[in-house]
Amino acid sequence: MQDYATRLDDAIVAYLRAVELERGASPHTVRAYRGDLATLAEFLARRGAEPDPSLLDLELLREWVWAQNEAGLGAATLARRTSTLRGFTGWLARTGRAPADAGARLRAPRPGRHLPRVLSRARIDEIFGQLIQRASGDNPLALRDLAIVELLYASALRVSELVGLRLGDVDDERRTVRVLGKGAKERIVPFGLPAHRALVAYRERGRPALAAAGSASLLPAGSARTPSALARSTVAAGNRDALLLGARGAPLSTRSVYQLVAALLVDLPGSGPAGPHAFRHTAATHLLDGGADLRAVQEILGHASLGTTQIYTHVSAERLASAYRTAHPRA
Image 1: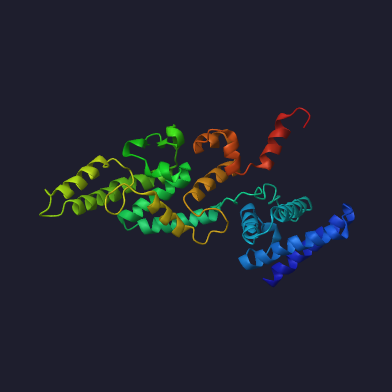
Image 2: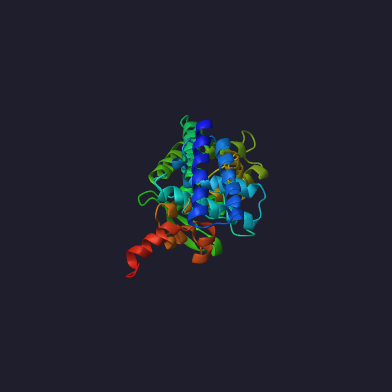
């Protein structure tokens, strides 16, 4: 840890010297930059990051912004610290101290808005690793939970859309799901091979067991003809095409999904909600980080306007600059 602190301190000192000499920054500005970058060094030391500033990445820097936001910083201070960090990572890249500018796409939250929670790809892998291990024993609830999280992340669904899915909404051949979104607007959303495998396993080995358990609890021996039992049986029959079922065979509730996700994200930093929407926002962010078109992400999310999509996702300034350089005749 000491080795890392020394090297990072050296890089910060060199950067501040460059700011002072090359840009003519005032002593007050240099002091502010030094204080901003000191918070980064402290955060990285607590985080136990790799002992090399050249290994800084966007996900780690986003966690730093979340930590600053949770500390109760004002919008102006947080914006300044984020700007300082972008300047530092840009200098690391320009001077050959880092292979790329890790902070080029880093943004501070807008004033008055919660900073959205975004899971790192490593955290996503960790969560799915846990869920897959639980589901390996063919426990019906574990198979269902894996299918839930796969769909939330693969298709960026709202929790209301997820629990409203019916068996017939899933197209296995095309690997798409038909979703009824806000305003009763229907859309078709794709999902990947891991989500498809999880859905097949749940429908073949998980859902039948949950449905059977529900039927057994609804119609116990000796009371199958009582009015209350018959009424519950009728309700169960009316919901028998629900894709996701609870432990008693009834359609899954939004509360159950929130409880599942909250347990998975209990340690996730950030000030925004820790519910299913975190997977939706993460999916959108990862799509954009991977080069997806903003309008395609808008369609996947089911947003009526592009402006709404821009609120919930991070636009890659790096990608926009690249598109400009490629397309504009005088770039």
